[in-house]
Length: 341
Image 1 (tube, one colour):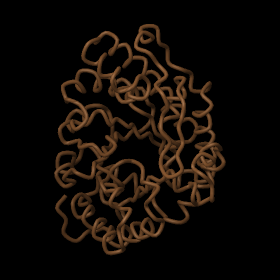
Image 2 (tube, one colour):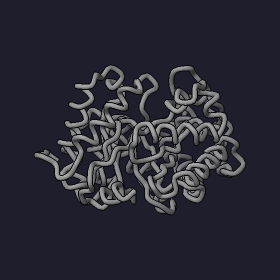
Image 3 (cartoon, one colour):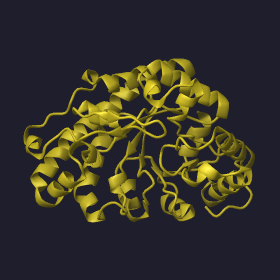
């Protein structure tokens, strides 16, 4: 924990913290299907603890899958054998927005399962490593609530309904984040892929997404990190810095050194190992990628080595994860040699 807190304070710890944001790999650790693994909070506790022992990284990722939030609004989850669960058909209609009320977290079976896992994980590790919970942003959740087409329609044509949806979603987001903090999470990762300029015009984010982020993040009673889920962030980094978040996740296509320069002293940067190409890395590639990220952004602290997306794909072999962890320990020791960040 001290290593992470030192990095977050924009100082250099003993070495660069490593966040392996692993979800699906816990199922393989236990020899279970992905659906069976996520059906039980005990499975996730066992899986996360097994991965912590195996890789020795600096966090526990208490995230199941995004579609659990859609389930809370009346949706469903579609499981697959070799990848993350996806949300089923959108549960909401546009004409319901005017009278919409947020669901209670304690009434959503899937969310309660996450809270049970977080309690078990906190009991197991205490404050030795940070436990990270996850919320979907009010601005990005409607893709699962309404579907993309209907959501874009109200964003462009019905600003009244758009504002109403942001208010309801921000209330739900804050309640869900605070429930996780109360259960045992130390910090909350605020996923907001639609905030990225690659996904939507920044003016629309500033009109709708940024005020919702401010409302939700200020109501969450603990540290938060904003992740654009592989999307570039430089075009909105000033907005993110003013939203109340403490960290920003960096996409794999972005210049990590440039992001660090823009964020230096304001936001801790985490990223940006490419989980897609990671599937085929050999040991030399793992070392090169880890060294490249550390060289780009680790100088002076304020940096955590992680992946670009906030979830490492199922197809990445365990051996590669071990090589990444070993390289981070070997080449991330402070004081660093050189560095562009």
